[in-house]
Image (cartoon, rainbow, N blue to C red):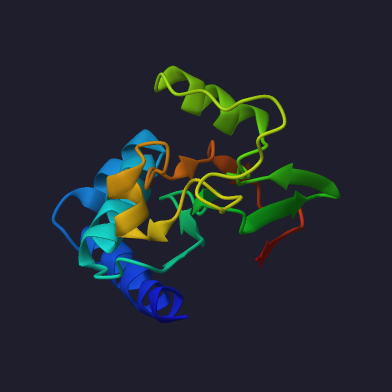
Amino acid sequence: DGAAKAASRILPENVAKILSQKGTIERVLTCGNASDVLKCAFDLTEAALNHQYEGCTATALLIWFDQNKDCFAQCANLGDSACIMNVDGKPIAMTEDHRVVSTTERARIAKLGNPLKDGESRICGLNLCRMLGDKFLKEQDPRFSKEPYVSPVVQISKSCSAFALIAS
């Protein structure tokens, strides 16, 4: 559980550090998108982890208000931890599953030139192929990745009800 404990401390610190840099918040508010903040935070977290033989999944949900007090949400994840938002009773998947058997992961892996065989559901014994940590595996097999999925931005109007559920 060392990678998970470290990531749960480091990832929020990295998000806060990036957002404290001059111009970052203004850029997010102007563009209405925080994907670069989330990707950078995951990259910095991966770089800070010294876990060669253990890894973890991760999900980060960033919520912000613009100058008009409109609310926005965007999420990034690795692995099979998930976030689902509910806006006025409509469920919105904010994450993507990175299991070896998922269609999107199989397509990503095939593009690398080493596709999985039919029925193959694990790589090096693992059913996940994106994670923080597990650096030894990533060095041994390029099908493992640290690249998070980043969701589209969800706008939450003042008149609607909304909540998010994050789970692993």
